[in-house]
Length: 488
Image 1 (cartoon, rainbow, N blue to C red):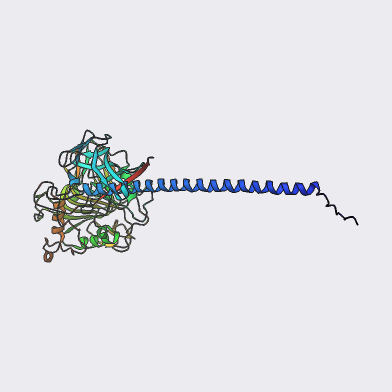
Image 2 (cartoon, rainbow, N blue to C red; image 1 turned 180 degrees about the horizontal axis):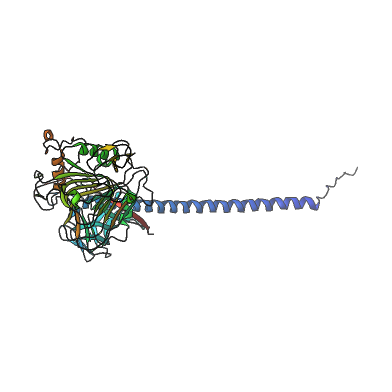
């Protein structure tokens, strides 16, 4: 019997094609996985590089910030050689900054201000003089510095401008703007006056200070300032409890009630259509008003010549005002020439106009300019008899002693014009004299009867620019603006 062979069926072309496509698909997936793996690996390497660069940049910036802080410490160092601190002895002339030891830092020349200093993680910083030195004959008001922070191949620069807060002293002029309206574009308007005529001198502290940073910046940025500020402009209230509307109200109330105070009311209107006449202390109508006489400016216990006055309404002085003590104006104040005054002037009506520099020495002490809402007025005749409604007899408005605030009256306007020569100088010992003069006899004062809790807060001690042994505390340095420059 012959064997039986079963012939296998040949595979179709379709089956062969399917086996080939599987191989191709597998190879494609393998390529995709390979590309993905390479991409992920490259991405990880790149991320690591970015992370490293970011850390180096961050370390460099941190070092630069440390340099900034170190510069403040260096400027504010107080030792046996410097009282006040070194900052007050820096000068600049012809664009050159000079430290108290006589070392000159030339602007924009990479002159090291603070030596290269190692920082954490191998970073270093170096602080250089940036080349801007705002100054006057008596000292530096602000300087511009550059702190270079480095870390391997990364460099970050912080450019910063430094000024003095002057926390411990009154300024020559205090702009008591509304702290609740710091963004108001009209909150404070300050006209420095001709640079040849007017100088504002803080005598070791700030020349001008304000309630808000916005007002201080507006004054600093004013193009009218031509080197007229000795001590700069800072946002610092030297006595917030006193300059607060309620603090001023309490002081005004006590001063008005004192038997030592001369309350000056306007004379009857000469023209009914013009309303209440302003007070002109040079007019024969006010010849009985005692304005005081300058005394020994260096002796805070010599206050016999001082006087205290309240002008109820507006003050309009076509001529010069000369006197000493404390003068409060409930309205606005206009001076034909710079007031020649030793002590304190407080203007509550928000506007001071000075028509000419004159030839007087100017203000020595401090001037406080506020613009307050008194919450109502009573009306008084020239003898000080008052009632709540205005009649033909009772004509001069004077503030009620309740509900004083800033609201509704944010504008403060300092407007100066004219020539001559005038200085507005902080007078520390003169303010001590005013304080002694106002306190009641039990507190060691002249018997003016003002409670120490509401009296003008004269300084406890005075700076020592003349080496007379008087020491005092000073404000802190602060960075008032800065920007960063990123290297590679």
